[in-house]
Image 1 (cartoon, one colour):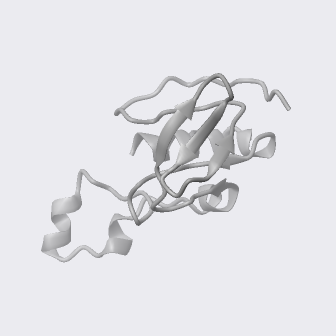
Image 2 (cartoon, helix red, strand yellow):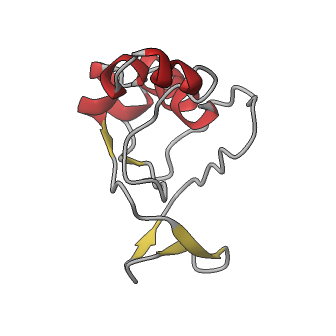
Length: 108
């Protein structure tokens, strides 16, 4: 959920106008509300639990089901679970429940 919140903030702050944003995640579906996941058993649907924001979906590339398995900070690349090597200018690891708001300048 923190990754989704970061992406919403980045898109709202127009970072996607300056940067190409990729969001990797090992799950086979897009972000969903894990806090209310038990409501699925009470009749909520997968669509009800989705956290997709249309602006984020339009601005961010999501290789769903593809996780990052290696980070090479010297080369500024990540290797994904499918073996792709992807370069980056800035890397965000959204693994917690909160994030600081940082607005970096693009290096391109």
